[in-house]
Image (cartoon, rainbow, N blue to C red; front, side):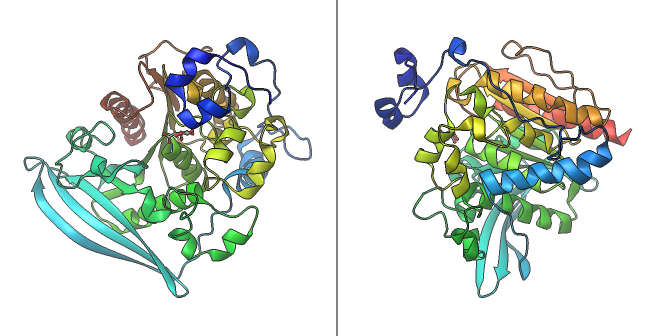
Length: 399
Ligand code: GTR
């Protein structure tokens, strides 16, 4: 194996099981050179110069590559959707918000799956409001409807004070985050996916669930479904990118500290690698993706192309300075490499040419980014920038 040692970092930056078995590269000098697949060249070798060719030819090619080789298919057929309000309280957060717990049940053939949504809507709204939706990959305590726990992972009060609705669902409702049980959820509706090398797995199921919540938002008069910001952290941030790539109804995508097979370039081979992620989490990506273990250079895509699939919609990506496992530099470079797609739409990003200093967010731009000082996490600081980014884009579009 070709792992390189930087011993003292290992104990702090990646899971202990891997520290014992594998050595990970954290040395910028060892990254070497790599060639990314050309985001603007069609499979028959033509350069993409117009939005039309991008949307009709290249974008579908890239989406299919990600489905077949990385995240799996995302079937959208089902028999019916039912929404039930399980709990509602019109006066929470000192009267500032209306809380609802909603169960979204999706039926197909003889099966169904239930996705539970926690939703707060600002009381002083005059009409439908824009909303933030978090894919919650951590404990449900972070999204407590009673607000008996308050954490930076989902600071609902801050979002309500900024006049947005704020919602969250727990990934386990869609696919338990476990290699033995991930199929007990959305995949009950699509058992054939389990037989395919390009079949959906957990991250695809989480993205699918986000789309069903969008179906609900479209029917909810309190929510402006044309202004929904999808947020995910880490493995949830991989899912937010994938969901926004698959479902153009998400107006803005936020991917926080998403790292390998999220917003970071795989070919840099810095921090977590494709082999490591596929070995630790065999239930996240499709079977075909395992062909690329230790063979990143054979991938027909890299992660800048996932970001490019979100264009022309605004995308906000973050890193944390101590989170080398998720490769901050490779994350920023993936954003830069996706810029040409935004340029096709005449959208110019304000991203600098090099990784910006910590805590200097780039907000007024179709592609936003910050590297927060500190460790791998989702915090009030991150959310305050997501809100600024949404304010910038939503207010601008109303002018
Ligand atoms: C790590 C994993 C990362 C990231 C992270 C998380 O163990 O290696 O890819 O997703 O978990 O979700 O916090």
